[in-house]
Amino acid sequence: MRGTYQCLSIEDDYRTVRTPHCERTQLADFGQLLNHLGADHILFVPAFTHAVHGRTMQQYLAFLDVPYDKIYHAFDSGESILYYVLYVRQCKLKTVLDVMALLFENVNINPIIYVTQEGNLYELGPDMAIQTNCGMFSRPNYESIFTQYGQEGLCIQIDEDFQYNRPSMFMRMGGPTILSRLTK
Image 1 (cartoon, rainbow, N blue to C red):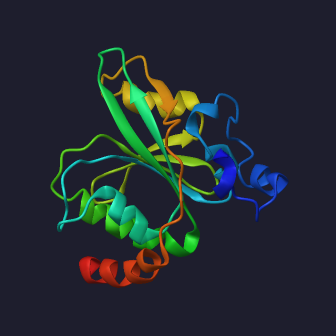
Image 2: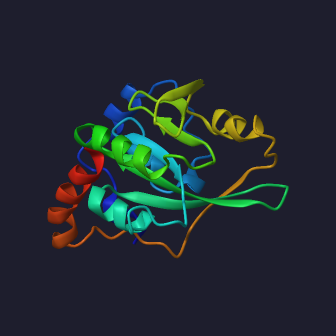
């Protein structure tokens, strides 16, 4: 069942009150995003295939212990990009941003997109600093980020074969130690 990591601790009404101006239609392609909008910080991070300090993207995500979805972005040009959609609680946000800055240091990347708990949409740079305020989160505003880079005809599709499973106890306990060594 896809909803195993659904944000159930925060009621729908509260999430709607936190993000009253967000357009909530046409979001089924984004996986669990609707369940986290207004409750968690949401990061759209492009996947990378290179190893950083000998570890893969999936290993770093396991160390961070944040739920995520995998979604594909396909464009009219034929280009396809895999994005990880991270659902980050406030208490882990700084660590996640520090690790992402390390992972994307000196790398030419596709846009990193950030949605606050209040529903504000931002484009981040490789250092995780806000580059552009893109208004309130909605599908048209999200798509416009890619349009400005000449990527037309965005088609978003969730990876139906992917099922998030929480990392092992070893990864959850050892992850903070490994990450603290890397981010110092």
